[in-house]
Image 1 (cartoon, one colour):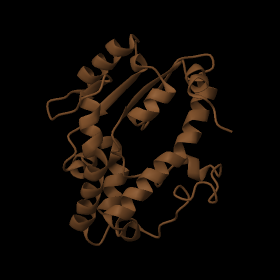
Image 2: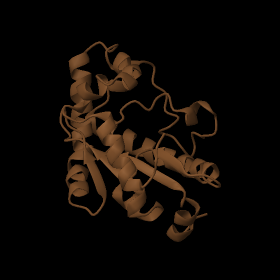
Image 3: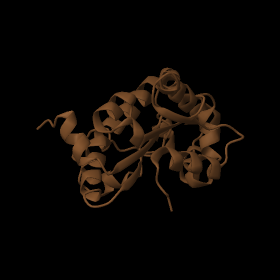
Amino acid sequence: MIFQDNVIKEYLKNVYFITGTIYSCMMLMSSLKTSKISNAAFQPAMNQAFQDADEFFGRTAEEYKKWLLDNTREQLDFVLLDLIRLSQNQKVLCDCHLTMEEAEKFTEVSKIVFLIKEPSNLVDDYCNRPDHQGFSDFINSVSDIEKAKAVCNVTLKSLNEKKYKEIKESDYYWIERTWKSTVDETVGNVERHFGLVIK
């Protein structure tokens, strides 16, 4: 069954999105996969098993890129259905990945913020974030750490370079994270854009 854009927007009217370019490399521990909701016949990327970090990061940049895109696309259906359920009687703030094309289908310009970063050396930056130490531990467990990081960086730059420029040239509200950025400043900008008090 395919729902029209106006139907999806109506059911997501209480959802505010914080999104950006594809940045998360580590989707192995998806709660969707472990919940057994997904099915390998319909969500093959989500259900692809990797023996260890060497196998996960041993793919070519093109293989890795395809898997990331497929995984993100497969998870989106689950995310949207959860958001519809959760936002029936309350406002919901959702941190997920949406493209600008998806944003146009699912929400209004006033209800989405794109958080972006210049797409170079994303892996070290990602690993240095305290909320992503699981990924840092995982990539640092490979036999050849520098090669794994290089493949990740090439993949993410390939995925994000064009999108980064398109977002900056769009009518969407975006915030670029730099070494000068602070959490409080970012939260304040998001609050002002949404007209919400985020606790």
